[in-house]
Length: 86
Image (cartoon, rainbow, N blue to C red; front, top):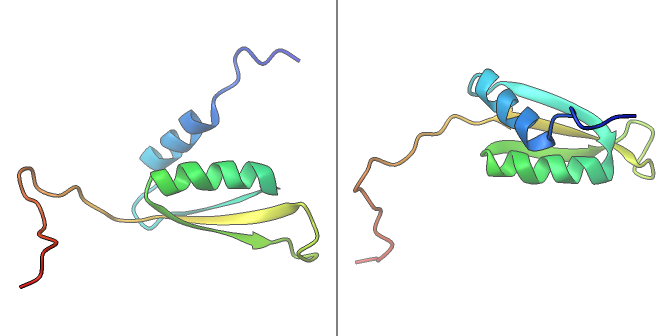
C-alpha cells in the first residue's frame, strides 16, 4: 500500500480543531497506543480528553477517547498575571 499521500495525525486533528465549535465533542475508538498519541496532541490543543475502557472490559486493547474542545481565549497582549501573594 502506498502511504505517500497519507495525512499526518497532527494535520487531521488540527483540521478537526478548526471545524469543531467550542464545547464540541468527538469520540475516537482505536488501539490504546494510538489513543495515547491522539490524547497527547488533543491536550496540546487544549481539549478536555479522557481515555476509557472498552465495553467488553479493561483487558481489551481497544479503548475509547472522549474529547471536548474547550472554550478559551489567549491573554491580552502585555498583560501578565501576578503569582506573588500579598
